[in-house]
Image 1: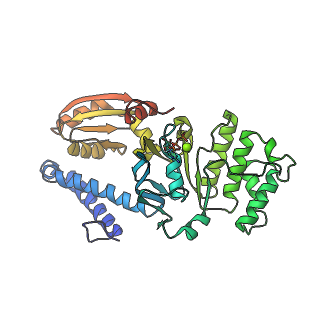
Image 2: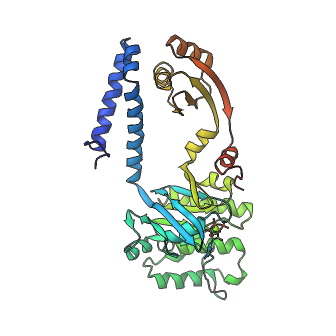
Image 3: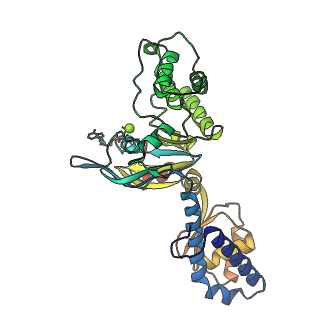
Length: 366
Ligand SMILES: Nc1ncnc2c1ncn2[C@@H]1O[C@H](COP(=O)(O)OP(=O)(O)OP(=O)(O)O)[C@@H](O)[C@H]1O
Ligand SMILES: [Mg+2]
């Protein structure tokens, strides 16, 4: 596969980039950096963009769910609008949004439980349209409370579902109950279950056939704090120990930030942001905001002289440094000596909540 506009494979481009950086550092070491940096400033930025694009392309190869311009209209109301979701293999993706944001509708469209007005959904790299029989047996989901028989026990209920689904593994029910921490062959009937037990049985039902992908709509909804933490733990185990990919939703920011690897913020049907939790925390933890005359040149100096790796370029004049223990006086001095003027450097500390308030236009989440 080639990157758009480049007739080379990803591996070849990686090699070229590695050589370029080596060459650049060699030139910098030899003291000719001023003219070189000036001449290659544009190239530097282009290559950084290309590297980013390369990373994105590699990520795309590992997508378990991808939606393209996914849209749902009910009557006059567009409840999901042009959503491009990217759920990567082996990760937990948390869809975060207030009540009515469109979380359940997105999941329903992916699962074929409601029609797609426009756009497309791909699961395991295949368009769901026309591939339903191949795709859906590989997914486990809870969208609404599953219809269990009230007068049967949890074990009896799951045994029926296992038979209906043709689950071949003999111990499937026992194992699924074990994962969610419910007793096997317990005498309690479903109608006597607490909400937490019902939620657990729902998840046990979703994992009965050992699916690769789980879609869980508000799996901790209505649970008490201990129940939430237990459910959170076994969802994480399903991902880490059993390699499942999980798409889940919640309207509680703290909940999602304790569980998800990647977060999509949905607001009034629009996906406002999609990023890894690590990136979001980076954006919002402590950082030094540096205003300089030339970010490309400053970035080179920071990398070369101070071995700074954790930074991001915001625009031509703004950099964020996430290594906050750096000696700023020394950095300022060195940048000045390199003819880079520093107009300000300040320590910032935003919380995730501040950030979500900002992206949702002040309304925030939970
Ligand atoms: N069958 C339907 N007919 C008309 N409107 C609907 C239908 N289902 C959902 N909606 C509307 O679509 C919007 C999104 O609903 P959705 O259930 O997807 O939100 P949500 O993010 O899951 O909310 P919650 O956190 O309350 O579960 C809401 O305004 C809802 O009223
Ligand atoms: Mg919902």
